[in-house]
Each structure stands twice: as structure tokens, then as C-alpha cells.
Image (cartoon, rainbow, N blue to C red; front, top):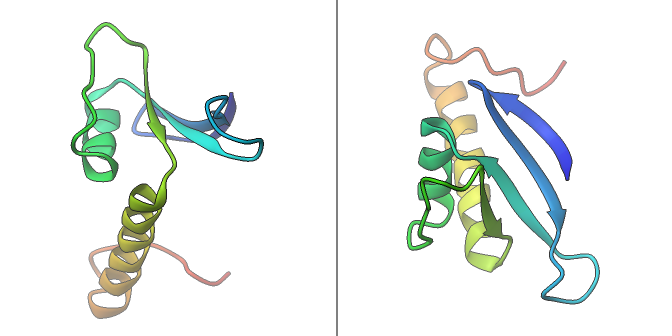
Length: 91
């Protein structure tokens, strides 16, 4: 697994998706309250088992659409209400 970030004690990463051709990935999120919330935003119909250490979310078109929507949402918040968010878009 390749770790991308750790946010609020929640590991977020990727790993290859062996069920499709090479190059596809699965998003891997630690099964924490934060991870469950993120998984719920990205794949609301995907069941989460309390006993699994990680939630695996296949990266399909719908998940990609939701990721783009979240990025756009945070950028919009940053520009319309900069006092709410300390997100730097340009260094």
C-alpha cells in the first residue's frame, strides 16, 4: 500500500486493483470515524465492516466524480470565505 496522507489519525492510501487491468487503483482508508465519513462521501452504497482495519474503495468514475466535487467544494469555500479555511492553493 502507498500512503498518501494521514489526516485526523486516519491513513489514506492506494493499492493496485488486481480485479482490473494494470494501472487501476483502490483507495484505502483506515476504518476510523473520519475514514468512515470519507468512505461515505465517496462510495455511500459500499458496506463497511466494523472488524476490517481498512475500507477499500474501488476508484471508478463515480468515485472520481465525487473526489473532483470535494476538491472543487473546498476551493470554493477557500475563495468565498477565506477566514473559515486555511487552505493554500498556491505557495
